[in-house]
Image 1 (tube, rainbow, N blue to C red):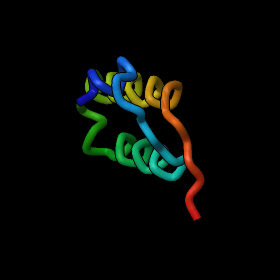
Image 2 (cartoon, helix red, strand yellow; image 1 turned 45 degrees about the vertical axis):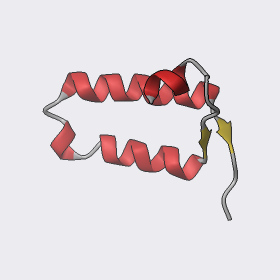
Image 3 (cartoon, rainbow, N blue to C red; image 1 turned 90 degrees about the vertical axis):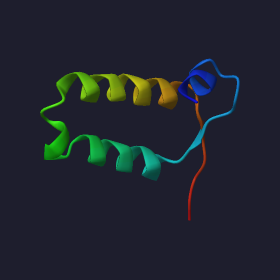
Image 4 (tube, helix red, strand yellow; image 1 turned 120 degrees about the vertical axis):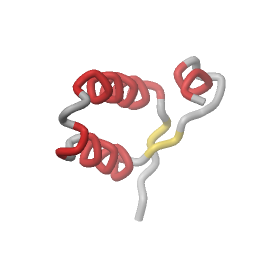
Length: 58
């Protein structure tokens, strides 16, 4: 799935609210002991922000 999104074979759609929620979850204490996972997840999220089509939610 990530391969499809990161190689832009599918269109990734996000909202700023979803990105904020992802960041909030990644910053929870339970992930602090998995530094490499957290770093990799932030890299993926940053890439998704670059390639995604953003939509406003009401």
